[in-house]
Image (cartoon, rainbow, N blue to C red; front, side):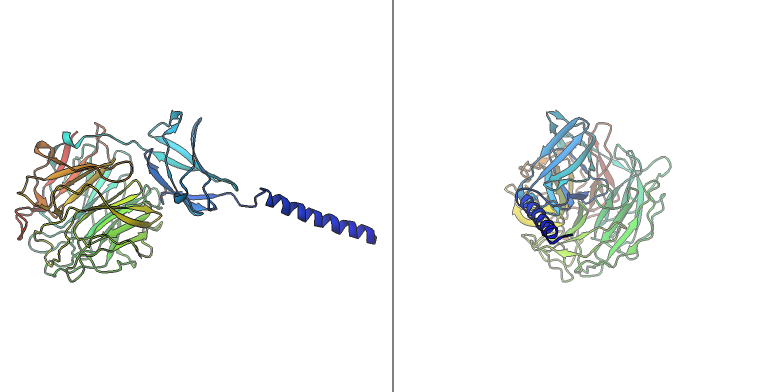
Length: 494
């Protein structure tokens, strides 16, 4: 190659570099396509339409692109708010469709589009939002617990089929001492407990807790709310009082067991190494989008706490490192109620007074607070404009499809006069004004320190079923309370 040829080659190579740089500066992009890792921190994500989901991944870039929802020939494109868009996470409201509504129940394919290209597709299961009126409720009883218990906890576990589920009950105080019991039984679509084969709470094998517990928290993880295998079911017993003679006590242990989704058997309880950051009892817990949240409770000195903790649920069901939220509860509270819905965490009522006797009665508060919940982080708390009708503590909460029922517990007024009240979630996340329920709309249980849950099964009338278990008779706003109950109530209508 001559000197002239070498010079021409070098000039040509430099021109190619300059042209490449010019193209990049004029709109060409070297950004890689985005990648969706999961939706809602779960293996099998589900959501109704018109509610937000969390898309987790990487390469989403700093500024909003588009999220595309596809079902057959229907394609709906959404540009999320910039406040809900980061390089690793997106919060977007699921559209009802585009011109033509999506078929619900059904599935949609979700992709993210940026200047780097289009992401991989992830399937989102669309579920129905059932409408029902708490004013039309009626109640009956079903299979009673093997023993009367107060300060117990229970969760519902979905079965291996859409028509099966199980109720798991742990711990409690039996009037003499705290218990280490663990019970399992079938849930039926009509809300009743038991089957022709499993006719009692003790027919299905369920290993006892390693230690006695009462006034603990309990939670459940499966593929619809966590990144675990589709066949996995995990239940957790968190903190609580070890001995009824403790004043008040409190532990930081977290027990985990698996539940067989076919048979309902409960495995040997495992003591997790990821313990609560402090010893607590009377706290509240919930699982949402792959994270376990715990808030409030009494410390070992009987002082209410305002701390809010969260931890990711690992694929094997164990827990990650606990994080203390920078946004504590506005009021230090124990024995409150908590749930998550539509990207928000709600903490309602509870006892703001010091206490060393968790089985005693004591008047609560009417606070209703909520905060944004995104990618495991709790935002600033807002006090709801409408507080509860009654000051309550040691009560139960039932939340389903945007309806919220608060009930039982210790409240101002005579027992039975204000057993239940209810509200609804507004489009902005606040709760509407509370309305009282009376007559056949309430079970007439009149207990406190009971436990309750919403069954994952839908009744033949396409309505939810609520269960209320155990507790101690509410007799006033002070003192030790009345008889301890083994009764299990379920709504038989609507």
